[in-house]
Length: 255
Ligand code: HEC
Ligand code: HEC
Ligand code: HEC
Ligand code: HEC
Ligand code: HEC
Image (cartoon, rainbow, N blue to C red; front, side, top):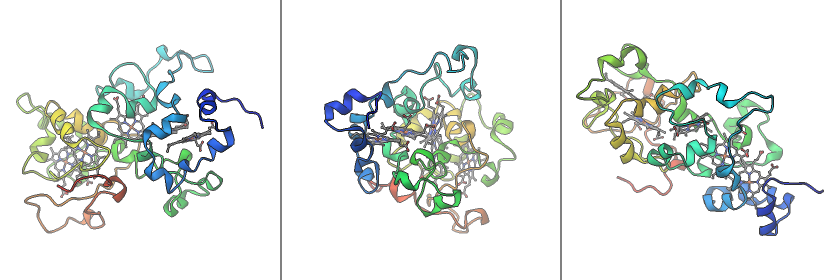
């Protein structure tokens, strides 16, 4: 079958035809687990290159509107492409280290998500990204219900915590010696850089813990033991893992 491809030039360079490229085993388990970004980008260069539309297909100008998330302080610059915002924006590069296969976990396209419950059987949603185990980590609600000492959502209580001398009120409870101080030791985050940037404002922390929430639920974070932790577990934490998902620990040095 003759098909034209936006990325045709790179397929030709590879000597691969469209069907062979589409069914390249690199898309599926187990090969996808070991794939490097360079391998994926050898065919999908457009993922980081393509410009956003100035006008939608229906004629709406991007400059005439803004999505709610573009109005947040955490959103810098003009609207940009989803992939670049996670892989190559200045902020993404500063605090994150996401790879293609952090999100794309691969599955057989002939078996795409037969039903929502089936996600639990190893299927994932559209384009093989698992939103519940992935996006939710950084785009869930602020789980203040689990935080002793917080009476309400952050936007209501933050003025009791953020102050000019200590502009990040999260750290009054989550600083050194505080609650859940063992965090972010995963292969897609830059843990030290996050703490360094976060000294200036609580929005750094809130950004990934409620400030960019696309979901009405919050991610059930693993609960890593921290120095000084009370061994008695609160009820809400009974089913929590005590370590990050194994997939996110690959390549990490134990601290
Ligand atoms: C040999 C070239 C090649 C390589 C290498 C490759 N892809 Fe693809 N990929 C394709 C082609 C061709 C398609 C089909 C494109 C279409 O139909 O629009 C495709 C489709 C996809 C899709 C869309 C699937 C869907 O369900 O619609 C995703 C996501 C994807 N690739 C991700 C990746 C990732 C991640 C990697 C690296 C692990 C990768 N690809 C490596 C050629 C490649
Ligand atoms: C933060 C998670 C995330 C990361 C990291 C990521 N993707 Fe995606 N990707 C997605 C999601 C979600 C979609 C579906 C977007 C849609 O079409 O609605 C997608 C769609 C795609 C598609 C098909 C649709 C399209 O936009 O062309 C390809 C191909 C693709 N990604 C390749 C890649 C490659 C290559 C990398 C690494 C350079 C990568 N992705 C990194 C989440 C991610
Ligand atoms: C490791 C944390 C992390 C994960 C995982 C993550 N995001 Fe994000 N997301 C961010 C950050 C940080 C930004 C802001 C980047 C910036 O300002 O440059 C962002 C920005 C966005 C934006 C707005 C950017 C735009 O203009 O497109 C959308 C939409 C989004 N994420 C959706 C998703 C979806 C859907 C997933 C899962 C496929 C996902 N994110 C996974 C951290 C994450
Ligand atoms: C008044 C103290 C206090 C403040 C201020 C505070 N937290 Fe917490 N936070 C806690 C406590 C207590 C816990 C639960 C500790 C435990 O696991 O027993 C917690 C838990 C968390 C968790 C894990 C929730 C879960 O379900 O596992 C996250 C994420 C978190 N806080 C982020 C933040 C962020 C981001 C801020 C600032 C925007 C913040 N916290 C401000 C006290 C606080
Ligand atoms: C770029 C996004 C991002 C930023 C910025 C960020 N976090 Fe997180 N945070 C995450 C992700 C993702 C996890 C889950 C990692 C894992 O699975 O272990 C997490 C986990 C946590 C946890 C659970 C700890 C545990 O027991 O494992 C706490 C508490 C927390 N973050 C607080 C904070 C605080 C406080 C800040 C600011 C100093 C902050 N986060 C900044 C993405 C972020």
